[in-house]
Length: 65
Image 1 (cartoon, one colour):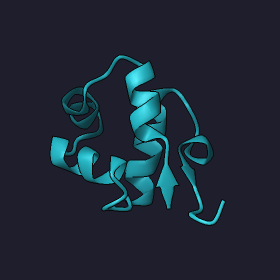
Image 2: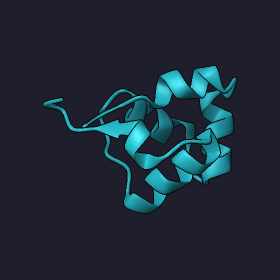
Image 3: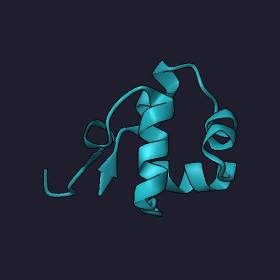
Image 4: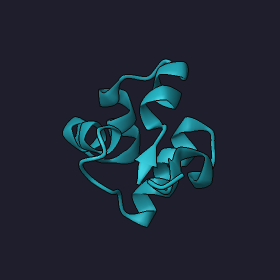
C-alpha cells in the first residue's frame, strides 16, 4: 500500500514528531509508515487523515494503482 503522508505532511508544515504527537504514536512509526515499511491500523489511518485535514482514501492507495 502506497501513501501520500510525507507529501501532505510537508505541505501542512508538520514535522514527523509533531504529527506523531498529535496521533499518539512515535516519530519512528510515522517514518515507517511514510517509507511503506508499516501499514497503520484503521484507527491510526483515520487519526492521520484527521490531523492532515484529508480523507483516508486520499492518503492511501493500493500498490497496483
